[in-house]
Each structure stands twice: as C-alpha cells, then as structure tokens.
Length: 170
Image 1 (spheres, rainbow, N blue to C red):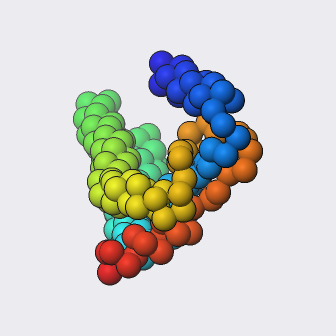
Image 2 (cartoon, one colour):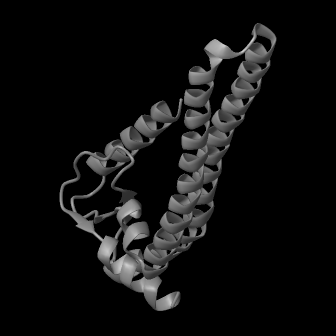
C-alpha cells in the first residue's frame, strides 16, 4: 500500500512538472546520508554501536554457556538414569528457549533504539528543508531514497542541509 501511495505521489509530481513551466527547480535530499553525516548522527551512531556491541557480547556469552552445558549433558547422558536425563534435558531446553527469547528481545530493542535515536535528527532535518529550499529558490524538494529514479535539472541539497543542521544543533 505504501509503495502504491509513493508511486501515486511521484506520478502526480511528474504530471505537475510536465505541465508546469520549464523553469521549475527541483531539489533532492538524501535524508539517510544526512542522518549519518550530521555531528549528532555520528555521535548517536557511535554510542548506539558501542551499546549494541556490549549487549551482543552478553548475548554471545549466554549462547556459549548454553552450548557448553549441552556438550556437558551429552557427555554425561549415557551414565544418567532416564529420570535424571529427562530432568536435565528439560532444564537445558528451558534455558535454550530463554536465550532465544533474549536474542529476539535484543533485536527488537536494538531496532527501537535505532529508530528512537534517528527520529529526532530526521525530524530536525525535515524542519530545515523549507529554509534550504527558500535559499536555493527551489519549487520542490524530493527525498532521494523514496523511489526517485531521475529528475531533470535536480539540485542535491543534502550537504547544505547537513551543514545547516550542524550549525543549529551544536
């Protein structure tokens, strides 16, 4: 549905541009690149990566621990009676499920954190687009990663947007 909406919007824009005068100035901005290249984006990304690596290390430690426990169980399983073997196996299965759930929770938290860190920066960048548009006398600014494949006489304003964002958000 979202792809259809984007296609419809781009089609409408193309239709307007084709019927409008030849002097329509189109700007293009790469918000993902801007996010990654602003000072806050770089700082946020570095902090996020450090935190994610720390949590991933903890998760891998848990995985390694359960793997060792399974190996130990397999070595001892032959000498255990059936009841003891079934109890230990059930405990190990429960621990394995717990570690798998921890991994899923970790992935969800990572994505939520990434989105939470990026949103205010993206919102700040979007808020500055009208300023950049007025400075450059642009009639229309499109996001480069939203399905835009080609625009005649486009002006990339990404670098200017990054600079303006960094000036207003030291």
